Image 1 (cartoon, rainbow, N blue to C red):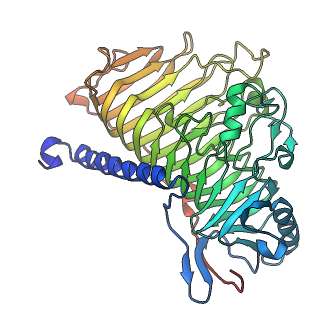
Image 2 (image 1 turned 180 degrees about the horizontal axis):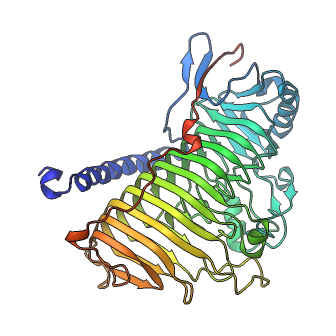
Image 3 (image 1 turned 30 degrees about the vertical axis):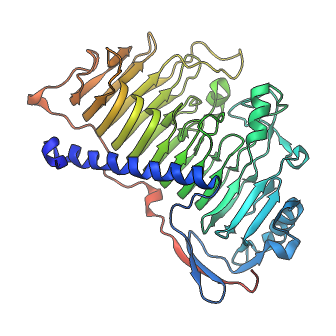
Length: 493
């Protein structure tokens, strides 16, 4: 039977089509992950030119290029290439004011420890190139905790630097023909579970205090912890990324914009042991003191599988504030929650002006989850009077199938979460769903055309006052970014 006959509302019919498409896409994705265990090719590929060349889109093209082999790199999966990468970036950095430079990584398995990038620089991975993260702890320098966090996430001390790292940079591109970065995280996960970590685990990609960033057309596998972490940065494009980690791997968040402004995340596929996208801005008194929010963030066309976590999470480290987040055309499969706000007493900060529309979900524990009692404090010095402000939360035009509960919305006593709007949302409950589909405490708002009927704290406006929740129609500055067509001819493989 056509969807239009099952769903009288044309938007719901179209959204349901997206659910079915998402299920098919996710199943195909999981088959490929299981079958190949390491090479999932998604997103737009660079065009291969005749004569051993490439053509691809980037925020800026480069006047100079070199291969990692020119610096002694050996792609046998055994030889350490840490010094080769470090030397290559240092040498190519001299062209920063002369049209910039590109480092090309050809086909091969390139074992490496951490290395830093430079400004006006492109790291390009061939489609059959695999960066393998070293298992030698000596190739992972230890750096200070982030100032907005106070100390590491795994331990109270410092943290291992990320595999690909940069700070105070301008105009950085990390891309490829869907080449792979494999964090080989199993060793780190075991140390975490055994309580034997000396410092916080490294991430795959972290850029700090930087602007004009592009991370695109890559496959990221088995990160020790978070995969992509832009922090204290602006003007960021993350596009066409596939992220895969075992669904029980600890803290393998997909993409975590943290105290960032003007960010665009689109066309990404994430299978994760934690939140697929987690929006952050600092932890308790450290984040309050640092005071740098995440704002002007757009997430589009994301497909997520995360059985133990959220598709999109706001927090829990949100003490610097989160504002103006726009998410649309999201597909969630077999995930714990669709959108989750995580906060608690001592966090301070705010989560305001959140807009989500055209989201489809299949096999969920909750469609919506708001947590006002999230623990996990940085230390015992947090301010118990620092209460978060949660307001202006808008969800609309969604279809959910096979959910255990519709929503669990829990504010804070004496600190009500306000101005919540949910409209045109149909939630199909699982055969063994909870008897009470909605639980609500310390929240205020309205609903319109929502099934099953929501809790009394979110009263339905009725047929006479059908409401459509807000979604901004203006573009953010990052939407104006257009990629240039870059092409290079190589004399090397």
